Length: 269
Length: 269
DNA sequence: TTGCTCCTCACGTCACGTGAGGTGGC
DNA sequence: TTGCTCCTCACGTCACGTGAGGTGGC
Figure 1 (cartoon, each protein chain N blue to C red):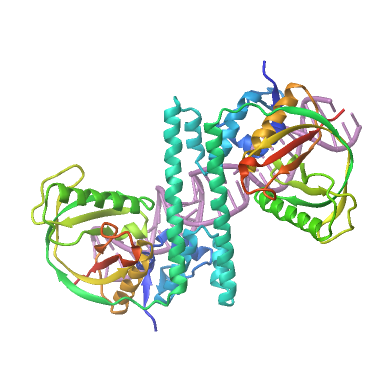
Figure 2 (figure 1 turned 30 degrees about the vertical axis):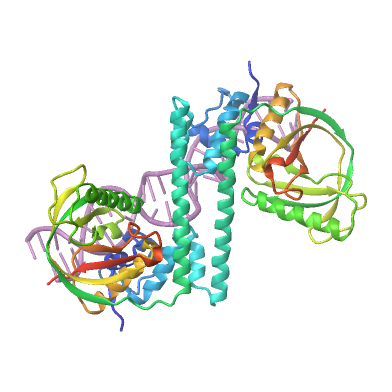
């Protein structure tokens, strides 16, 4: 029979607060070994210490409680390691995003911005290979990278002849409601039929108002603002699907400073 | 008269969602330039774009909304820069804490733990210089570093003769309720009277149950658990003020692996 | 007996997102 | 007129913390 301790003792031993332990009891993450039926007092056994120690470490790394639970109940060590490794990847991605956010803030504070130039241009209809999905706020960047990589790969493997730069079509709702439809495409002379999630897409002809953004995609909102300002000032009515053309992106160079993205808004009337 | 746009337009231009813009209106972070009295429609002016861009970047860096407001309303650029620099420091500290949490998790998963040995010892009363404060959950480490540095500095400057290793006294409540009284001290032959927040402290004699923790302080809960387990198994009743003795710490070496901390619980009876 | 530990329950926090139900404007 | 944009309001989310009011155990 193993020794048992009170919440207070267990809290001191694990450096989890009493309130936190009560909460973990309530949500079933760490149930006391015994609860006194009369007083309601919680009693923890010493065998629960390793679980508490693991919980504390995972929570310190912001792993959601539901996932911590999965780790604790994992069938085998492999499954457990996968869950932990996935979370580590998320932390890495978050770190990268924070770094780019810091750069983005520095850029905003340090540089005197002048508006990017806006011009208008008619573009003809194009045949293309494309991937379309409904995406949420957090997966935009990941989705974009993955989808575009796939398209580039197909172009290489199937030896397709690109007839223009890669681009994207984005529903306004994506920005306004943080959820919406997004498409990435590469214009080609002849598009093969469906291939995994890649399909042929006929992109319609439009009249576009365009501007070019230079630099990291973290700052692309600045170009959207410039383009939108121009359109608002000239009372130009626009469609709800925005285009981006990746004149120079991460598939060309890792140096974000030399990236160039054309932002284009279809003009109505 | 400057052009004005709808929420939807402004959302697309700033990459802030409509819901977010409404929220910022509600909390007074970014008020629309004009709100139609009849329809309630929000209208934003193009002059509000820079503010929105700054807000988005600061929020991407998790700066609390209240502080973002302070940045926006800062009297001069200096004050603004101070606020931003402070937040950057917090991000740095968070990063360091995440790194150590990752190490701590690795340690737990990779090493087979054996309990640290527990022994008992009587310690006599000691004269010391000390700093005492009531501290919360987040400032423990920062407070500890700062306070102990101050004590070491006084020892050097006033050429005091330490009569033992530096230590700390921690109220159990600090672990159980995440808020409580903490003291750090250095035993000296003769303690000068009050000096800033440093004061003389007579540390009473006690009988202690002790164990030694080796490694980073992020893993110190493991030693607390070992010591607590020993006490629970032997039905030893203990006092509510825990002692730590820093046999080897960051003031001796930056290599956390060789740090040694004695954890000691006063024995009652 | 006194204080101390522990209990429950309801509500607060933070920064929005969800969703119902509805209305003005082109 | 139809759909589209926008509105308000109440509630949900996440992981606890706060605080009131109360009870058992040494």
